[in-house]
Image 1: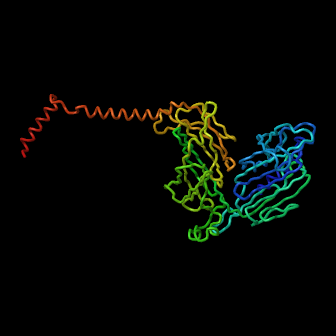
Image 2 (image 1 turned 30 degrees about the vertical axis):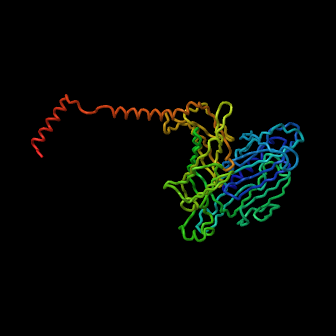
Image 3 (image 1 turned 120 degrees about the vertical axis):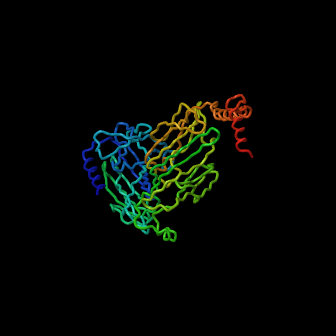
Length: 480
């Protein structure tokens, strides 16, 4: 009921909204992918300028309650004529606050590469990724139950512009659907629900739809993931990842029977997951997987020239609400990830989690640079919170600089390359070897001095005379 109340506020608030521009959407094609716990909405928008003045931006509108779960947004346009022809170019996207707009909506501005003149058109491809948008219903299930979830959205495209022609398709994991909202021109084709086509809808048209369906894909959520990437100029990049994982699906109730689970895991544990797959760089080595107790042997590693895959299994199957903590580590060849440009060295490595099935609530990436690094800067493909720390390790004098990057609501689309630039003097490489050589040298000198120094007591000292008298008295009093 809270969701529909929010929609009511939106519909009431937009009745007196001013016209933003003379743009119209001549065609909108939306595709909603609900096959995993992450909701992906791909929209193809054909934008036309029906006015006289050129337009340099296109606004995208989202309800405030939906925008809170927005994890990733990208927009691009196709260069060239015809569907699927030409190359695509990404466009800048940022949050804006147009005047006179209702507070229940959040707007993002897509900057066009050049002003769209009178009568001109442009086709935009917009990808929006949401997390925590599939709500388990019921919220609690037993080991033998299948997991059902609810998804809510609009059958009509919410936009500040008039929409001439539009259609919507909702892709589900399979054809087992409990219920769904039926609008005009609605049909199901296998595991897909199709809405439309619809024509001539005014700005801010909204028609709520609800889809209740079976979803047993892993709802693996890392409440926190800490990735530490340590650079050694002696030829290695060491990566360690600490996970705090939870099954964020329907809560498990009742007793758990391992016997039933082992006998029929797809029936007596359909909503649980037992393993995850981490896709590591192709030349990863020295791979390990451990938890708080110690080494876990239930893991499998295989790879080729293009990738290395690590399949890990926690000590127990993960049901709704269950938690676990573990960490994995691996080494990488330095020459594959460290380069030089403009008098600086830079690390080029991926940002996100190597497991595509995992959503990350809070991701912290720590890049540990060699001691003596300076003029440090970071280049990331998206906004991140960053600061610097210092880490003391073996043979360090002042400590190693650590670049810390933090981001919330991370999805597989964030697994992009980022760069950390820094300057480093090669003479600093000799610091640790010289410290070791000096340490061994002083140790050997100390041993030589110790072996050649007479540590016995002088015969002329009073203590030596007293020692002789005591030995003589002992022989007289206690003869053998």
